[in-house]
Image 1 (cartoon, rainbow, N blue to C red):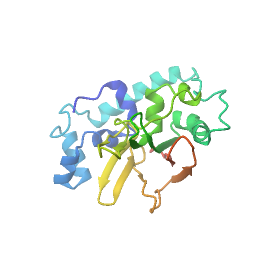
Image 2 (cartoon, one colour):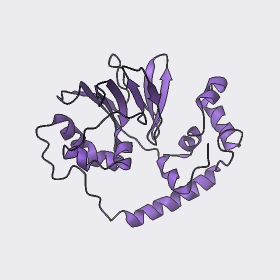
Image 3 (cartoon, rainbow, N blue to C red):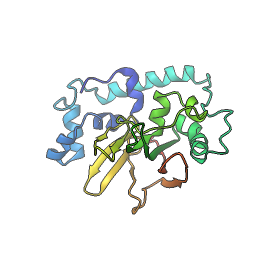
Length: 228
C-alpha cells in the first residue's frame, strides 16, 4: 500500500484506524490478532513501510484541523436544497439525511436492487457519504439520474453474471465472514449487520422503503460516536 498523503489522514478517526487501513485480509488470516497486526504495521513490517508514528500522526491531524477551521465558515449548499421530493420517498429519505451525513454525525449505507441498461438485475451496498463526496447529487435529486449500483461501491452484485466486488471506503471496512456481509465503521469500530434476520448493530437502524423505481431499497443508518 502506498504511503498515505497528509490530506488523506482526515479520513481516519484515530491512530488505530490509520494502522487498520494498512492491515490486509491476509495479515488477519495468519495473525488472527488485531493488536499484533497493528503493531507490525507501526514497526514497518506490514503496510507501506513508511508508517507514521503516533506523535507524527497526531501532529499532522492537528495541522489539518487548523486548516479546516479556516474554511469552516464557508457553507456548502445541499444538493437537495429547493427540490420537491414529495412524490419520491427514496429521494426524500436521502435528502433528510444529507446534512447529517455531510457533517459526519451520521453514516448511511444504502442497499438498492434494480435493473441496469442491459436488463440485468444488479444490487449494491452504497456508502452514502462517500458517494456524496465523489459525485454531484444535484441530478439525482432533480430526477435527471437514477442512483445505480457500481462495482466501486462497498459491495456490488450482478445477479445474472454473478460478478461481485467488495471495496472498503473511508467510512467503512468490508468484513466478509461466515455470518455474511458486515460493515465496520472506521470511526467508532461498530459493526453494521445488513442481514435482515439479525439486529443491525449498536447505534444502527434499518429502514426499508417502497420505491417504484427500484426492486428493493433499504437504508442502514449508523450514528457515529467519535473517540475523544
